[in-house]
Length: 316
Image (spheres, rainbow, N blue to C red):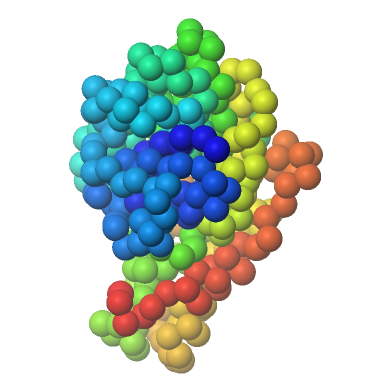
C-alpha cells in the first residue's frame, strides 16, 4: 500500500484514477480547488476509508508541503490543470496559475519533502500545429499555439530540471483528447446543449473536418497505473492514444443519433479550426508505447459512443 496524492483529484480523469488506485488497496489523498472538479465525481471514492478529499489550490507550495508531510505521501499524480482551452484563450492567466504554477508548486513541495515519484499529465498541445507529421516523443521544434500548450511545455521543462537536480523518477504521458464518464465539457457537451435548445439546427465551429484521436478515460487510467509503477530513472515520456481519429462532423452525427434526432441541419462557421489556438488535426506515432505491449480497448469512434452512452441527457 502507498500513500498517494492526486492533484486535481476531483476532476474528470483523476476521479477514475483515484478509484483504480483505491481498488488496489492504496490510500489516496485528493487535492482539488473545485474549479473544474466536483464532489459528485468522487462520491464512490468518498465511501472508501482510504480516501481523503482536501479542498486546496494546488498552486500553493506551502499547503502542498504540509499535506505531503501530514499524510506521509509516497507518490504524486499531478493532474491539476486548466483543461478548458477555450476558456483560457480569453484569460491566459488561468493557464499560468492552474496549469503551470500548480506544476511548479508540486515540484517544489517534492523537493522540500523528499518525495521522488511523480506522474505528470501532459498533452498533444505541446507539439503545436504539425498536421502532416506523425508526432513522436522525440519530435523537435515544439511550438505550442495555445496558452494551455505553452503552460504544459513550460511544465515539462521545469520537470526536467527538477528531476535532474533532485533525482526524481517521473513518468509523463502526453494525452490526446480524453473522454468518458464524468466528462464535463468539450465538443460533445457543446453539441448536446445546442441541440437541446434547437433540435433542428446545429452550429459547428469550423468546417467539420477537424480530426483528432479520442482516448477512453478508463483505457488511459489503466495505462497510467501500469506504467507509473515501473522502475525508471529521470524522466520518461510517452505519447498515448489510439491509432484512428474522429472528425467533428462524425461526432455531430453520433450526438444526433444518441438524442434520437434526424434531419438536423448543420451550420458550419467556416475555416478549418474551431477557435484560435485549436489544432485542427494531429496524429501520434505510438510505436514507443506499443512496443511495451500496451493497446487501448476502445477505438476513437467507440470512445465517443461509449461516452455518449454514459451521458444523462436530462442533466446537461
